[in-house]
Image (tube, rainbow, N blue to C red; front, side, top):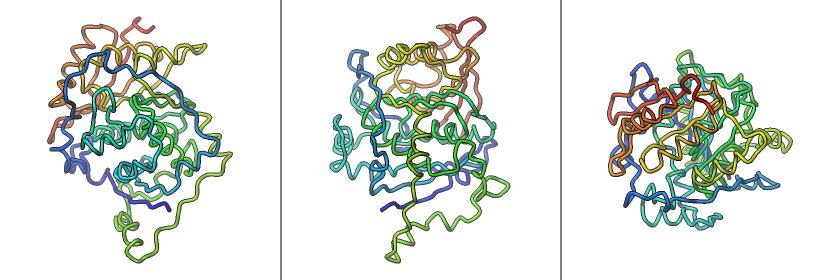
Length: 355
């Protein structure tokens, strides 16, 4: 049975104009940083990259799915699996890495070198979605990489807005199989690449017209009648959508080595990466991946906290790293000053520095 619990991020979060308070600030004390024990060495974090193909009957990935829907401004609604239910049903799911049970047992959002936080939708992802809504970024015909994708909401947005191809990468194969891929399938039931009707239930400010619908799933459960299960797209539409996607797991060094074997090697017009600079040990492999895979006139959008307490990374250190390398120009697009400081920045090649 599939239930949908809707919430409106735009109406409750800090907008680029500084209006309102963030819906995710309630967890600020717990998720101010991705917790880890000891700072890892590069050798401890090698996880061989692999490509993952959807199963022949992909709809089985959504059996008994409990979903949430996030609506940001005028962007199309984005569906994703409820992360709490995902963790609570860990024993019923395929998990060769054992990260579902380990994160539950250790009550940790990150186990360095084992699990890198992909099961959680981190707050900076919502920041980047809001900035994309305000900026009006278009994706028609573009090649997109969602790097460190987790739930894959950024890549899914590009997919729904007409990107020609979207590739998803996360450190953990369990995240790709049990979260990213199902989320892509959930969103295939919408209007298709252009998603022209995405704002049909929003007012002129991009907010939900009927806030009472946010608790509709809970009301139905109280009445003893669960909400109707949303019908998935027909298999041909699944196939058409998945044909524009590829899914990878592994650390960035082995991921890069794997994808550049293709002829020609992929180049992406847009690379999304959110909450991925929390550990300075990962900066060299992240920078190398961006340098090799970004198209000459492409752009990387990075969403991040100013500092990750307990881990040591943050935007200032990453800016210094980028400046020392001299490959990219980094520009601040949106600085969220309220609460724990967060940022959305872009990286573009300096003239003549693309490879």
